[in-house]
Amino acid sequence: MQFYEFALFLKSHPLPVDETLDAIAADEARWDAQFAATDEDKLSALVAAVEHEIDTGETLSMFDERGTFIERP
Image (cartoon, rainbow, N blue to C red; front, side, top):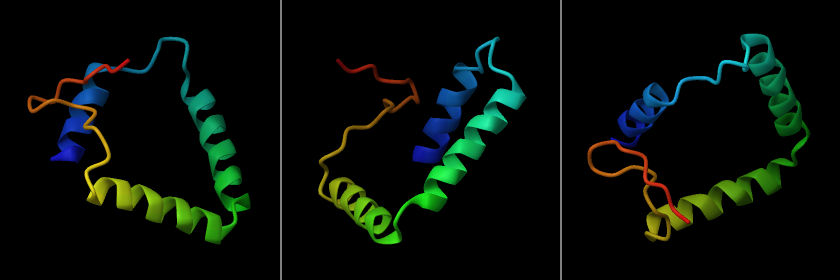
């Protein structure tokens, strides 16, 4: 269900006119380089912390039951 909600969000928020596919590719390359340089133990700890927050209900949904994005202060 979360994937469907996210797809609805993406559909309703198209790319900005000034954002080109080249700019997106460059941004993805920067992210790839950052992840490649990230210590595996630190990344694993981050993943475990996020999974714990999700499992214990410490997170808030980004979308309501109809797939509408929820803006929070």
